[in-house]
Amino acid sequence: MTFTIPIDNGDALKNAETDSQRTLYPYVTGTSIVAIKYKEGVLMASDMGGSYGSTLRYKNIERVKAIGKHSLLGASGEISDFQEILRYLDELVLNDNMWDDGNSLGPKEVHNYLTRVMYNRRNKFNPLWNTLVLGGVKNGQSYLGMVSMIGVSFEDNHVATGFGNHLARPILRDEWHADLSFEDGVKLLEKCMRVLLYRDRSAINKLQISKITEEGVTVSQPYSLKTFWEFQAFHNPTAGAQGSW
Amino acid sequence: MTKQHANWSPYDNNGGTCVAIAGSDYCVIAADTRMSTGYSILSRDYSKIHKLADKAVLSSSGFQADVKALQKVLKSRHLVYQHQHNKQMSCPAMAQLLSNTLYFKRFFPYYAFNVLGGLDEEGKGCVFTYDAVGSYEKVGYSAQGSGSTLIMPFLDNQLKSPSPLLLPAQDAITPLSEPEAVDLVKTVFASATERDIYTGDKLEIMILKADGIRTEVMELRKD
Image (cartoon, rainbow over all chains, first blue to last red; front, side, top):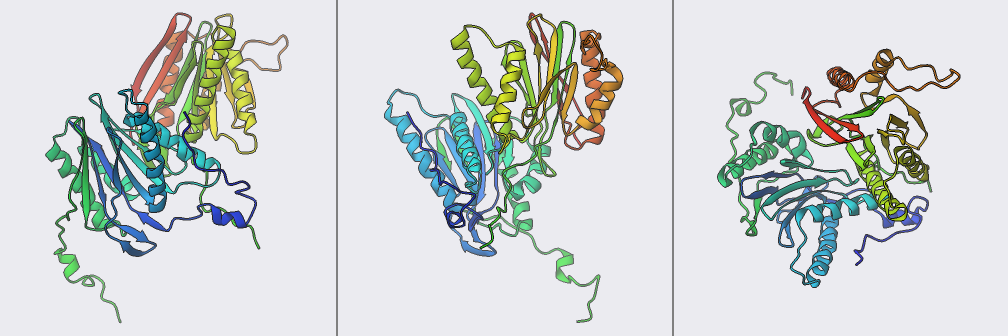
């Protein structure tokens, strides 16, 4: 059985013309994904924004999708590359189903496949400009992993991409523990997303929390977090350093 | 038209340190479990040690995606070897295979810094140390990775390797006992962790002997 890996494009490095055939920089991007393992499975949070450089171009992008029966895939980075990856995974899941043998791809397998795809594209100097988060549950075992655009991958009890790595991971290292309840898990993720909202320029206040358990996938309706801006320092921001103009 | 240059690098350094020490009838292979990128820590619990064959254990630091791909290639080549020869690869054979595999990508290297440890055909410990493009040497002990510059001089001091210029050639295998070697490894990593930001979290030690492999884990500083 063959899985199609993204196509070779010849002298990717040499020809100026073929430069237009490979990814040089991202255009429409999604910001952080934050995900944790909890008692019954995995929780994944993402906002719904798609930025076009510094413009907030799209505000209704779902950056977390269900893959097969056992996995959730969240992506930050180039949205079109994410959509491409979803198409590859569609084919992967289809072929898996066609065997009709009662077996289905678990999160470990999907994570491994994605790692190989990302690494091979990096080898051809034509990367898929994403950092992917793969979470899932199969046979009672929870799994959570991450792959970057150059193929670096690992699994852990909690992961975050982009700014989330800098802002959310420290909170998770401090407050995550095994067997979190659903409510506590959501509260923890919301705490991380709130910090990101305050401090990540490309974050928007419209998020979805996706959950995957042995039973299946649930994606919440989009909602927004309460924020607080009434700090004294914000009321009179120049109080400490009056300017001359 | 000027040639466009990529604004991303296909390489990254995920840090970490690997050490191996060869004894008269054992081999100690150790590595920390921290995986980093830039100034961030990605994981505090990522193993850099990989058992390739019964008597050959590979430890690699550097760019993790390349390390993983390298391990997969070697693992699959070993499987083919077992099918064709009806036996496991010996450590010296694996050493040559690793060197060839690395050189094969001489012009787009695996950014992996390897230490291969195991038991040779006579049951004595052996350690092979590599650079990224496959140049290798059989030694009595070695350190590779971000903490190697801190560790190697200390190992040189403690393990008093005879000069390779001597004739007849003398073994570089340490006369230390296994518990002493393990202790030395723990000391060396504790020290490297103090000054190397990419080394820390946990230390994983594998001790290879004729009767099997034993693993020990020790906590390291997490800062």
